[in-house]
Length: 276
Image (cartoon, rainbow, N blue to C red; front, side):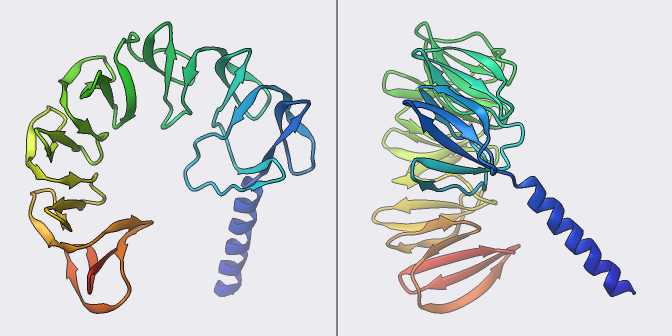
């Protein structure tokens, strides 16, 4: 009886998940774009110059005959262009933010970057600016901090418009796991949310942290460090990349060992770091 009940619960869960994964597709008619549901019914009228897929994590889609399948957009907003200006609407054919921006980006974590009247800003889903628009170019944001650019230099501000660091970096990435990799005086290192160095700039390249580990390059080879700047894997590989939940490069295994909560598989001229 226990196993039968468990089986029924699993079936109901799968049915519920499948019901939530409603698929929609972009369609084009008379050079205007709209969206149809699985029955072929228009759910967003074909009146827009351009429609963009909402930025949905792990949402599969594909192109076929000018159609792109979008699974479970939920409350995500579609970016659209009409009469040369950009705005946002939902899957229910309701315009949430009128087309008023010269340029804008898709929503991410509830916010989107906009550009209008020679100023950049960040808005919420109500179209409200989270701080007064600025003349600096906003590149990207994460963890309530955004990366901006002044000519060829990069800096950071928080969502209150307060400067974390002035534009002094040659290159930079958004904050991930409370740190950012930045390039200063020709070398990469990591700073915290106060703009303080937590790992000195000594790398030729340094990528963002991923569950406490980051891929870095010294001289001609790649390695992996922890948040103390200590090497988990010393630079010795031609390339290391993140693929889904693990770092990977190569094929032939030599040995493996356990490092904290990460399984680390080392390969000849290659590396794979797989997480639990």
